[in-house]
Image 1: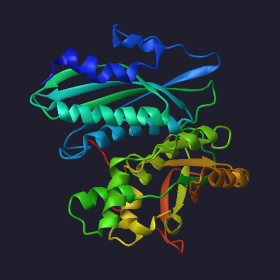
Image 2: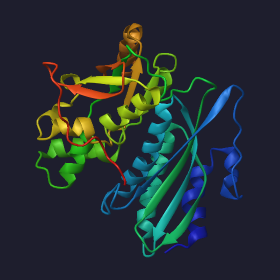
Image 3: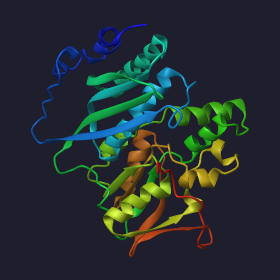
Image 4: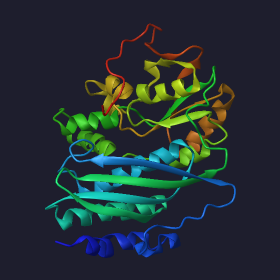
Amino acid sequence: MRGEFALIDELLKPLARGFPGALGLTDDAALVDVPEGQSLVIAKDALVAGVHFFADDPADAVAQKLLRVNLSDLAAMGAAPLAYLTVIAKPRGQEDAWLEGFVRGLARDQERFGLWLIGGDIVSTPGPLVLSCTILGLVERNRALRRSGARIGDLIWVSGTLGDAALGLRVIKGLAATEDEAFYLVERYRRPEPRLALGQRLLGLARAAIDVSDGLLADLGHILEESKVGGRLEAELLPISTVAHGLPGWQEAALGGGDDYELVFTAAEEATASIEALGSELGLRLTTIGRIVAGGGLEVVDAAGAPLVVEGHGWRHF
């Protein structure tokens, strides 16, 4: 089993070679130059074994989820990825083979999304495996998407489909599904798709945005709270995949399940044609699901306009 410095030299340093400011991971910190007119966007998320992933999940999938949930935070602000740092709290006895698979997952997504490792730490722990990522991105100064920009009359949009990841978690826990259904849903849970291209193209179109990590109701609620407005959501408009629609609990999963990492955003009605054209250009489903209204809170209604009572409003750690 490799020691700490051998792990850094053999597994992590190769992930830093394309970023000069990483200094080959040989110094105490990295050097990051921010181009004129840009703001540095910084986000951080962690994954804990037994909470955010299962002990037998593929190591490369865990690495990809770690990067992608952080990339999704950049997408929600319209930022482009630049670099990241990791902390690996490694239980004693964790095999090198698992870490090798983990690094392969990082390398694969680094190449796909265009960013580099520039630092971090490896420590030992008596507890479960804990993985943390701090991600850096760039966005044009004063143009980042915020949660606080929604205005009364805005349409509420969401990308992709909702509820797949939550149903994928239920499949892992025993929900009956066909082999094809299970593969699709579990992949959606393990390897979310950060909507980076969409977020960057929404600059100047959307007024507020957030990624759906804890559930549509919870995350849209953050926009409403920060923007000091209310929302009316039409449940019949929720974009649901054909796979999810055939399984029990799909509506609950779509409204409160979380882990989809789609973008929910608001925009003036006049921007509708531009947003629809953007969805076609990106090959990405973009759906209006409601409207921003005066007051506060979020009302969910059925096809007849009657209020729906929804059990649970998303994931909470505490």
